[in-house]
Length: 364
Picture (cartoon, rainbow, N blue to C red):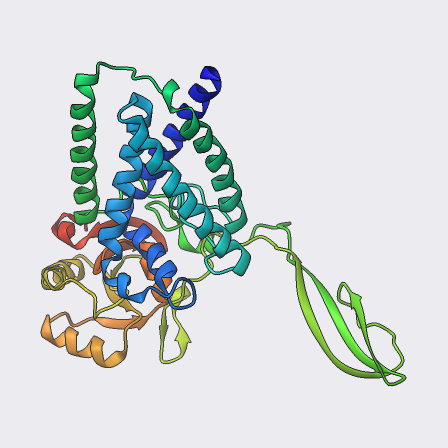
């Protein structure tokens, strides 16, 4: 049993540390995921949405430190109880998401390892079994270091986690696992390779034959059936290849200008997914950067999912003089974890991404 407990202890501890660190690297991304869970269509806890970022930081710091506590053998009773309660909650959450298809990615490992809802649930079931082994055999969780050092290790872990969280919140994630990381060419990211698998569908054709409803399923061809055709429903059998970038548009007056922008030699994108939620301090920093970019031959455009009236009002307030375009809010949140944020392009290739607090560091 000691060997089994030791194996479970290392697997659970390392998974909690890895999962916590990946999310701590991008707490804003995790807060977006929590907002999905808080929405009326999932848990209907909208009153928690304004506190999503605070909850995200506290949750991932606790998750990471809990993994460390398990590995060093600190307070095994408290640690195993906390692990058990957390995994019960998350197992319920991932099952609910998977069964009702509410959230397509649980965010367990951030953008580093995307999991489908059912994969997330099965992962939690395995963790649940391992944590049960630890819970009922906690007497075998012996400390690896002197007990006097445990409190200092845990205290230092908490402090380092909060310092790291503050750093990435005031700058950008240290490790960028998203499709829009620096060095990526957007056009190439949107392309479908030759020979990539295509989506496979079944077509359920509905007819009325001899006064009875009849359904004929084919892979696409219209069936030869005697009777009156009523309708057809499609059913996805196998998903096809989805390019890493597939939801990005740059629209104005109902037209998509994405390809036009991607052909430009030098472009500065000023991104504010929601101007209502943009940080005022960040908006105040934009004007000098925009002017410097134009002096260096950059075409400067603004991207936001907000309405034209708000764009115009804030443009005047902060003296930006921007050419504003519309883009999907989710796509803009994915591109950069800053509101506002700055991205430079060269022929569609992402050269640099900066948080508004680092606006003056942009290399033009």
